[in-house]
Image (cartoon, rainbow, N blue to C red; front, side):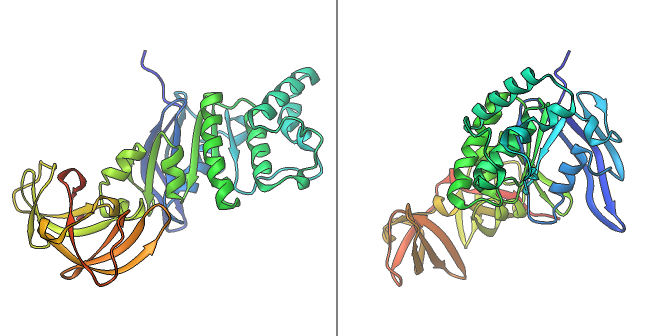
Length: 347
């Protein structure tokens, strides 16, 4: 018997009045997967999460959980827990009582509650914090308690709605690593919502890029970054140089008045295309060893690399390189075939 998906969203549409927030979404989420819904504000990612959690009901479509239709099931009857950006911890309860709250509601024995809370505190690296007041904890510690409180109920799916948004940059990066470790340790499905591309690429097994209520692309972080399917994904995920070009034939593309070898095929001969080249994939070389030449307009030091704007004709390249060239200098630019990504024009 084939393995059942953790969640199936089938033809999900959600309207608020005349506004279509989700437009016929179809998505499956595998068991034990870390899947991230990624997109700008208003793209529909949080609404998707709320529909999975039971906090919203779709206008049309079905939510299938472990093969069962749960579309109209209330949140408390779903084997799904949620961690919100505002952690919603109880300030009048200490750490132990916050984590134990759901277990007490289920009338578990004191011994079972103690064992599970102790295990959760160990998982989130907060052993010995049982009697601490919530308000005495840092933002990162409160976030860990919120996760522990959700996980102690042993849900099959954990929903996380931008849970790192309130943390400072350093702590956010640390918690990205911790969250991925937790997910692998407990072995359950995590569905994560964020507008932060780095978070999505760092933690996820699968990334779902959304915009205007539609799914733009689904894939691994490497696929999403290296093989964007349209201009929106290319621009939203990282930084890109996007140029208009012509796919002359398989493995040969023309842009900026020059023919380039590439690894793409399957286009019509002389088809109008968009060409995507990441800033780190543009090499600075000696001016006499390249058919592509440019003038350095600006240089910024970014720590691990220099970010330069280099003009070629009417196009200004963004280039990331460990080689720094002075503003006003002429340089050669080289782009290897593997670093050229050709996309069909959007209709």
